[in-house]
Image (cartoon, rainbow, N blue to C red):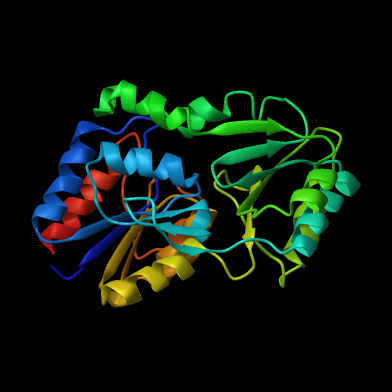
Length: 287
C-alpha cells in the first residue's frame, strides 16, 4: 500500500453522532490492517478514553491523546508528554476570569473543575462512552470509568500553586455574559505558551502547550516507527485536525467538517453518519 499508517480522529470521524462506531467502519479498519497497515488513534480525548476506544477496535498501536500532548503505548508506557508551564496555567486562569469564560484543566485522566456545570457533570460517561453497539465490553468500560475522576477545586489557583500539577490540556466554553471572541484572540496571541484549536467549530476551545498538536506528535511517532509523513493517511473533521491533514501524504476531511478543514485536505469523504471513514479506507486500500 502507498500509505503505511492511518491516523484517525475520533469524535465526528470514527464515532458517529450516537458516539458509536459503525460495523462497516470497524471492518474497514481491520481490512486496512490485514493489508499490512498500522492504525493510530489521534484524539483530543484523554489517554484512557483513547485507549478504551482503541482497545474496542482491537488495535495494538500507540495512541496520541490530548491533541498531541501524550503519546502512549498500548501497555500504558508514556513515550512522550507535553505539559504547560506554571506561567501558562496562570495566564489561562487569569484570562478565564478577565473575559468571564468557563475553563477546566486536564491532569492525567483527572478533570480539574472550578464549579459543577453542564460542561463537566457527565464527563466520565462522555469520556468513556459505553460503545455497547460497537462491541465494547461493559465490564471493561466500567473499569476504565473507575480510573477517571472529576475534582472540584475552588480556587484552582491555590491548588496549582501548592501542587504544581502536570497539566496537559485546557478546555474553555462560552458563557452568555462572557466575551469569548476576545478570550480566543487573547490566548491565540500567547504563542510562546499556547496552541489554540477547537473540536467544535470554535464554539469551544481546546488549548495545548505551545508547539503541540496532533501533527507534531504524529511526526514524532512516525519517525520512531521508521515511516515518512508522506506515507501516512489521516482522517479528521475539525480544526484540531487541520495541521495533521495538511502535513501527511493524504489528508481526508469528513463530509461534516467545516469548509476551512475541507480545503486543507486532499480529499473529502462522506459524513460520520454516512460511513465516511469506511469509504475513505476502501479508497486508500484500492489505491
